[in-house]
Image 1: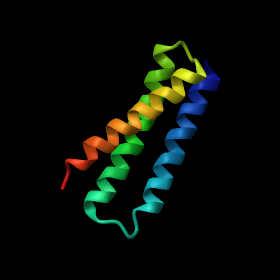
Image 2: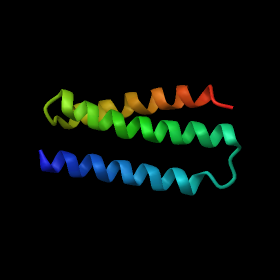
Image 3: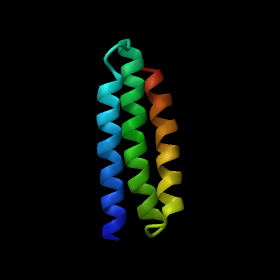
Length: 78
């Protein structure tokens, strides 16, 4: 279980860092979309791991679903 927590935390940190670095030349809408997708992926990874008892497939699946949801929610922000 500690490995899954470390993996989830590391994934979240990497996503946040990449989101911040990639936002330099973006419009406000694009930046909000990227941040929403990154946060959604981090939350999805943790949720997927929790729901599947730490399964790697559940973690990756949760991250993917969270990323898509974050992207779609971010589109609505102006």
